[in-house]
Image 1 (tube, one colour):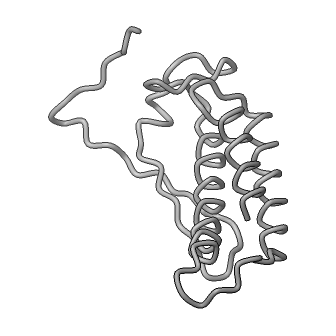
Image 2 (image 1 turned 180 degrees about the horizontal axis):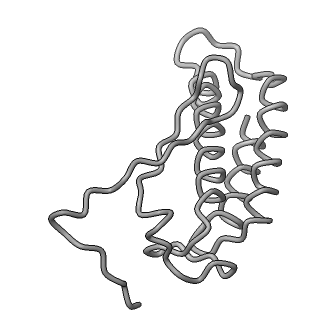
Amino acid sequence: PFRIWRELGEIMTKDVTVIRYNAALAKTDEKIVELLERYQHINLSDKEMWANTSFVFTRQLYNMLQLARVIAQGAALRNESRGAHYKPEFPERDDANFLKTTKAYFAPDADEPRFEFEPVDTSLIKPRPRKY
């Protein structure tokens, strides 16, 4: 499990941080799918019944992999730059299409996340550009 965890951390750090490219996000999602497949064949060397931290870690690793897919796919869906997240292919903010909250969920009949966008209420605070 620790090798998968390390590979997940490396690909997420490399391609899913502040500067994001859609091609790299797609490659990251492919890698996560590969890691999920490898996860299905994990063997634990620790066979203890009491305080088996490898078992606990391995269960949480599955959640990490699923959340990483949500992050990578959600980032790929937003073709804009917003806040601290920058896509050189889309350097401007796109309020018309993406002044929304990205919501992800897992449907029982699907093996990957599904997404929906919920409009943001801007009645109290109007959006304005951030200048860094």
